[in-house]
Image (cartoon, rainbow, N blue to C red):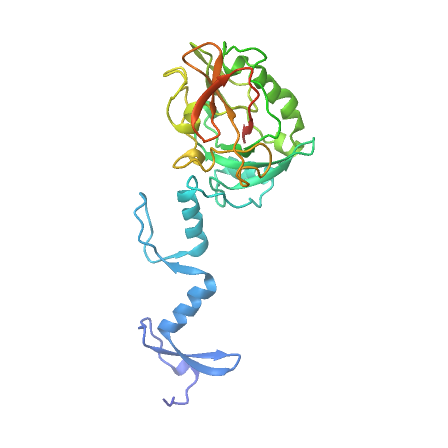
Length: 308
């Protein structure tokens, strides 16, 4: 192919181009030609762009091309509770708080995590368990991220010193321990962003809004989405199952201490719901990830849970 000798401004412009049209490009290895279709492949590869997937998820899926990073973000949201253990969030706790306030959850998915170090030297991996799961009256209509640790704390705790579930979790020894001794072991930057949102808690035969729980335990319904041993009605509260627990036992199964679940360890751990059938037991999670109940004076695993 030969080209007439013309300056750029003498060449006619076009607004239409086909896949087989040939372009002239100046490369580091000299002047070359390339088909338009091949040029677009090179551009997409360079920008990390992929073809739209044919998926049936409800909601708007744009036509054409999706940037690979955005697609990966969406896939992470979809698979969060199906064995997805997330990515380490690059934001500081203060930056997360700023993003929440602005309603900007970009780069944050259920299952993503931040590791923290307690003042006693214990490392804890905090996972995003839900995003705006209880937004409304419970959060004063503010945005909220709910965090639950991947594993339980290394130390087991009794719900009460005696076998009683009177007053439910709000009246328990463990609730006090969590919000004093254990809360005081949190890093200062974490304590600075924790919100004491309202929780509608079962008090065994009644329920009540609680606004003093910086640290809490998930109810049976928040773990499994239904009542097994907790009270139908009072045991439901305003609970919605956390997204991280949907679809599999991947995040329900927990070990005692950092990394233990990943190593195959399984611990019994407490939920914040009193058992409906008697006055001596609370609901909990069995070592197989099943709903169960245990005497209140039994030492069990305790996950670290808070809202930001």
